[in-house]
Amino acid sequence: MLYGTIAALSALLLTAVLTRFVRAFALRTGMVDRPGGRKAHARPTPHLGGVAVAAGTLTVACTGYAPLGPGIATLLGAAGAVALLGLVDDLRPLAAGPRLLVETVAAGVVVYGTDISPAAGVLAVAWIVFITNAFNLLDNSDGAMGTVAVVTALGLALCAAAEGLPGLALLLTVLAASLAGFLTLNWHPARIFLGDCGSLFTGFLLASSAVLVHTGHDALPSAVGLFALTVAATADTLLVLLSRRRAGRPVLLGGTDHIAHRLRRLGFTVPGAAVVLGALALVGALTGVLVHRGAVGPHGGTPLAGAVVVVVWALLKVPVYKRSGATAVVKRPLTASPTLTAGRARTSSALPAGSRAAGRHGWAQAKVPSALNGNPRPTPLQGAAKAAARVAGPRKTRVAMPKLALPGVRRRTQPTSPAQARG
Image 1 (cartoon, rainbow, N blue to C red):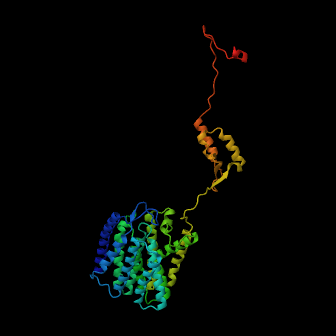
Image 2: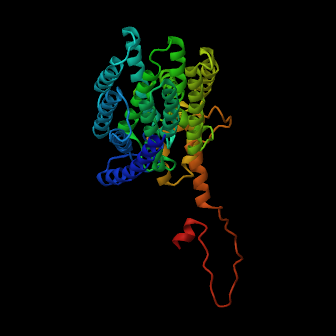
Image 3: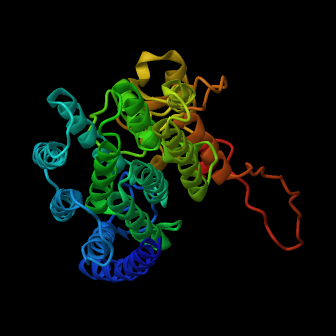
């Protein structure tokens, strides 16, 4: 217990300090995420926070102060390789093929050391790769990824301790402490993000630990426990895949269509969205621990699965993709419409020469009325006529003044006939 407390505090403080150094370095070198990407932020934000999380976790775990037990070194080596892959992807984006290849090999190395059957091993490798990328997708909003990962790591630590794996439980506790240190700068307003290095490292470590914890258990309780412990990341990935598929968008194209973004559109604040995701992860972690301990049967995950289906179905109805406006601009010649032709004839004489640009080339732009507003909108010709009338102002009338006859002044008269004009 004392070893775990000291290791967790060391990881928290070390990661908090390293995160600040990494942030300063990223700002100086320009390694930042620009506004407008899949992460909702208003200013350029560094994305190398995962370097601090991976360094803090591996440093504390590899010091030898706290014994981790056999098999943990292989897990740390595979997780370190995935973190290096994420760092390369942060510095220079990689294609999906090389990423999946490295993740699959690393997951195979972890699964190879277990006693599960080959068929179950293939499924375990596929599930580790899926969850690794699911946590990578979850790093899209301030505090979302860190909050979910802390709760998941603590839940897995309880399962590992109950399974008689103190080394794995200690490693997961150290990971949770490192993520908590990172959250000091990732909470809203976020000043740094995990990036691919931290999100892939965290997701791989959590997914691999979940497989190790459930090794040797029955298939159905293990499947329910794995789903429950990673329910937040699974639900977010499922929502994104279905949403992009329905909208006809590329699956690998990033965007603001995750759970946190949709909660924002429903009125939640950024911290509120992170708290909701953390609460979902907490419910899943408690369910997973109860199923793993046998306190609840596999049917205990049914309400959670039903809730996920309802939440995903409801959030699919939240509009997140930009659509074309309700009004469209239609070009047509003035002579094609008697109304526009008459309007041009009436207004062209009243407009100054410089204000006839709308009909200069014989074309006018007419806006189609919106479906939401039944009132037709004025055409540009009508608007120009009103503007010209406002500029010209009220028409002045001339008042005839009486002419006064002054003494000694001969008034000239206008000639009334050609003869008078010549005379």
